[in-house]
Length: 496
Image 1: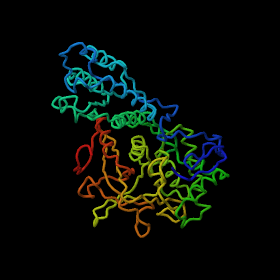
Image 2: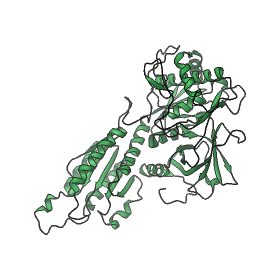
Image 3: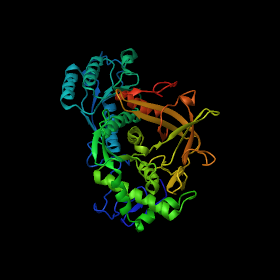
Image 4: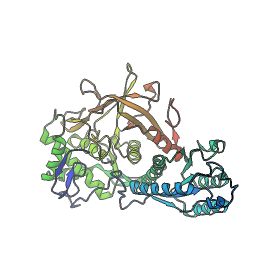
């Protein structure tokens, strides 16, 4: 966890992550309440969000049906297999998932042991229409039951986690299920982490559909639209409203402590007038947090170039570190990618411009808004320095964050459309260069792409980089929600 703690005037032990929860602004909105972060911790559901509801069921006949028959044949996985005991273990794990992710997993204490019980659940699914279905199969001869439930889930377009205890079922019955869109298939020995990944994927889609994002641009009046596939609302806000909040923001003692929380841990502060540049960065952050709180929004993007001292680079780094997507240049797909990645990984992403080191066959990503909190709010901060925005002379503040060498990373871009698509790449950090001699924007990362033979296969502009090996999770999310995978040139083992 970051060591940058300060006792702020809000009366709590705060860091720059939680700053402004009780700070007042010289604006009509009055005191600013805490902003609802997207992915800040276990079970921290925002009041305006409904948790994903996942219907779970176990499929096996009760052992009592065979207990009195000396010739009873319980088939695979064998008569010594304690299905009831396994179910109790799994249900305890489900309770932990509910706390960790803030979801609801509805599960009966009895199993589905025959077709009549399977039909009852099928009718329930048609009526209740949960956000997801979790089937745990502990018996080989229940193929009619699970076939019925999978068919109903497919007809109702319910994302389904299909978990089979390793060795419990003959593979020839399962093989046709394993690559089906709309399903996350798992065959393993008590792999609760895999189940939790599937639950997280269902919950992420639910949260995307309940999220509101802001677009701060030159519009004269606010307006609103909805992203067709994700269901995420976007509200357009005139830039002049941001500028008014920026101008009205006060640099009081709390604001000065926030500035210090950036300056003191920095490796260096260079090429800026500290007071002018950092006070402007703080005003930008106050203005953006004010707008987010006023609208109950979960993230934002804005036309941020050529804005002089109003550029929000340091605020964007702060917000992304909290799991609140903040995308440069009014890039909607990048904003959606940042939010999705935060929900799937618990980490903020780094949106950047592409280049290539052709001699090393490496990809190069650079921009000005990278959070030092590469591993989420509870992780250690990466080293960074504060410096001047790379492309203008007015002296606004940006950040250069140094990614650790050999860090596994995942590069992602969401593409709206019919069908929507994810492009996913796995890689490893080679180096974050000093700037100069390297060019581009302030933060840069040179990456070895590990699942393509040629770095030039990486497509797209403003791809989003996440610290950690999450390529498989993103690909499984795409398959579970019937999205297209771009994956140009991918040569790894599916799903990565």
